[in-house]
Image (cartoon, rainbow, N blue to C red; front, side, top):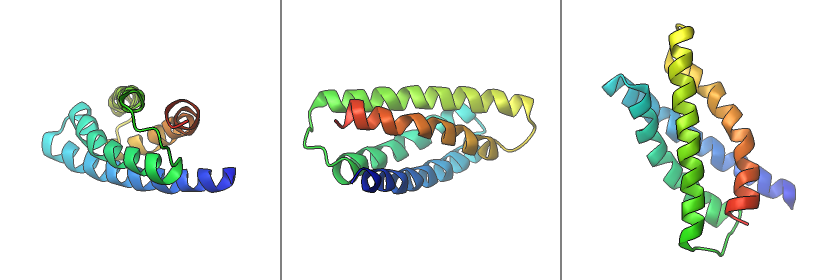
Length: 122
């Protein structure tokens, strides 16, 4: 049962990542601003991620405002870490920001499962 939940989490995370990276690439191209692109893309992908994790992965019956506050506090922290790290790495490593964002997001992903499972959707 635990593996089934984690597999669902991975599927939702991959879908959310694809949405996030697609919108990040589009917004970064349009605005040439990594911070703005990160914020806009994360707003879109986090809503989808939240709903799928709440309803399909963790099947949380708890739908109070505290859960939303916890989740979006995590999203804001993730977004700030991602934006800061990607923005600074682009200045050091002269490659496309999208390619830098991929491993950064993977590292952030590792922590999120435990935070969401035991703190947000418990």
